[in-house]
Length: 432
Image (tube, rainbow, N blue to C red; front, side, top):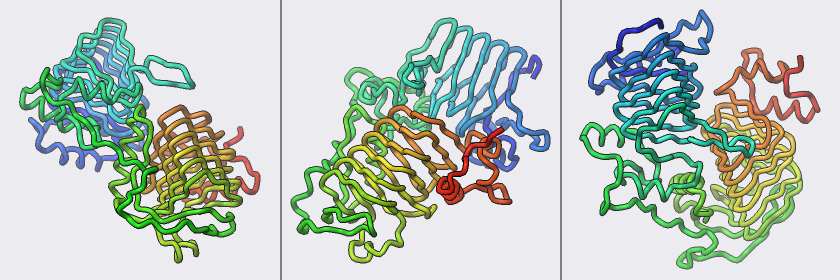
């Protein structure tokens, strides 16, 4: 865009901007906006992906600049960028002048890298990652060459400052899990009210997490028995209602996810394993196992470490047993679909981790160690660092990175095809 005139309405920049129907859906969802002149970058897919949008001159929007998905095109403004609000999940932005928000900047999801040669001016600046750990090194994810002229609070999981955020911001901005809500920011803005907590205002406090290690004494607990998990050997278990595992208070990100997960399975039966355990052979989370007929449950909780001398497998894409490990988990390979897997400490994978589809969830309280992680549209969260290579179908064209033998004729790839290649000792990565 060369020296554009001011635009009226909102802009949405997404990877999906190449799909025209998304524009209609977005406009429908924004139908209550101040005006209906919202602009959705609609690129012709026949021309191929567009890596960047370059504005030669100032870019002025009367509304919001908005990105809610993953991996939008790079936005380069050779001048000043002036908007009402900037709500950014992943949009990389380079501005050679000033970034001026008459309202607020909010980093959601993974936030987006931000480089400004001038000043950053806003009524409020809420980055998710002002400093983002990368291989153990703090890198400036947001950097400006001028001054930061805005009251600011980091609202992301790094650093682990959830209580500090609660003490500084209006309690009405958060949901029951303590997550800051875009809709609440927009509502307070429309009402002309402050985002920040005033002296004397209430401070948001989340309810204390129930302690899994202190079972509910009002519920009868059967005697400990032994269960043969299909060739994995016997483990000592007893039935118990599901509680939220007690995790460290400095991990609010993980705590919030545990809380949400427990709400979904409240009062369901699980198998409680009272100590660390080592299992020989593959460990399945699918629901077709014979032992579930005698021990019906929705999941397994390990009060300690789980070492599997084999693979952890969940082929079903939309269901499976929930596995909660209150210590560390060590496996040869991990192939999961619709089951929930929550690990309070480190997850170590010897071969490959494949997480497929988005009905299931994978949450790790500390570090993830795996030579190769392949995410096929999966819901993943890692509190610590990732040691290994990560390939994501949301971010990358996997056909350019993985061996062609892994793909079906229609271009689809599955965890099963990767599993078979690993067992046949075939290379997973494309060799040139």
